[in-house]
Image: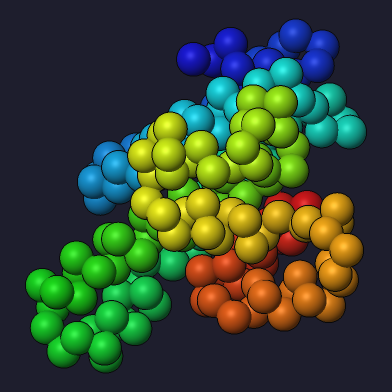
Length: 178
């Protein structure tokens, strides 16, 4: 697996490996099956891509996702669900699903833009081929700048992101990582 975490100069990127291992451990701990699939898929899809400084591109989505884990985003999601369902068991199940979708969206947020050759259906494969939750593709699609569309505007792009707490949080993590 570490073959995918090489810098442009061929050395291993220890930071990317650390982020990857932390996300995998967290996803296993909370049984986040979409996240486990998404992190491995992102590593595959971004393989061979590099940041301007020579680090493997995957370090960016790994870092953005790891920020959410380190900020313990699970707790406010759980509070939101407790207020909504007033039942801890139901709230916890919904929290795990929401967390799984959010982390998967964050790790995959750039694939539709950066990995077109491996995703010829513009990311629809996330749902159809890789069997990820449909909201993950929907949110990744919202986070993708569709500059080829005649009615595309940056204001419209950010307005749509702001319509969902999941895309808003993923975009904030993306911007902090960048």
